Length: 101
Image (cartoon, rainbow, N blue to C red; front, side, top):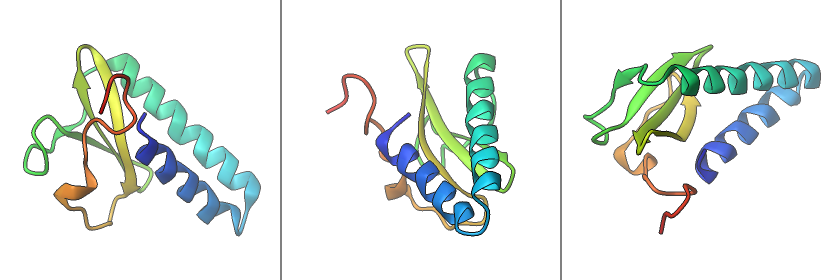
C-alpha cells in the first residue's frame, strides 16, 4: 500500500471518528479486511485505463479502492470516496512501493 493510500485511510478514519470512534474503527477494519480479500483473490475490479494504464478500481461501501498489479503484487495507490472527482495526477504509480524512486 502506498503512502498516499495510507493517508487516504487515515483521513477516512478521522472523518468518521469525529462523530463515532467505535464506528470509525469498525469501518476501517472492514475496509482493510476487504483489501486483504481482494489481494488474495487476484485480478478483480474494473479497468481504469482511461485514468492510468494498468489501474483498476473496486467500489466498496461508498469508497473506491484503486490499485495496479505488477510482478504478481497488488499495489493499492488510493482509497477515495466513490463520488469524489478524480484526475490522472491523483494516481502516481510507484509512491511507497518497494524499489520505487
